[in-house]
Length: 113
Length: 116
Image (tube, each protein chain N blue to C red):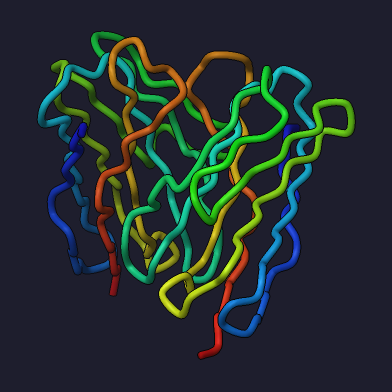
């Protein structure tokens, strides 16, 4: 079946450094790739997303890149701050425009002051 | 922005009882809603698609008789965990897209179920 692989599972960086999280997906029909930040016991919060007709998207300190040929997409956070510490999930739409999402395993990001 | 609510936020029940969780879209109509389950320190796993006015569709490995889904109105979907057991303890989260926005999912705040 479809799946999304996410790496690394944990990431520790110093405040001000950059953080990169990578995901690969298997469903060729996937055309929407959101990234979520989740704090303990809370709902996932959409931080950025990208659609398959775009290769890169940036929003202030956050950027996402997509390589459809390789079925690979990445989240880049620059100038990290302690409040960026959380669990980050990538996701990919499955089965075309169904609204269904399959999530990666998650990355626990720790930003040390 | 769009708001999705869930009720209750937390529930503790005894093994063998049934628990109902509500998911409401507060400022838009949702013909489709999705139910996810998240075990501690794990990812979200799609359980089923709730379809207004028709039967829910379940993902592979999810027991439809165990997790009953009803989507009786355009703003409400319910998930009933029947004959709950300790292994059903989890964080249950619903999501819904706004009409015309198939991709963007608005997540509810989640329901923490603990089965004793």
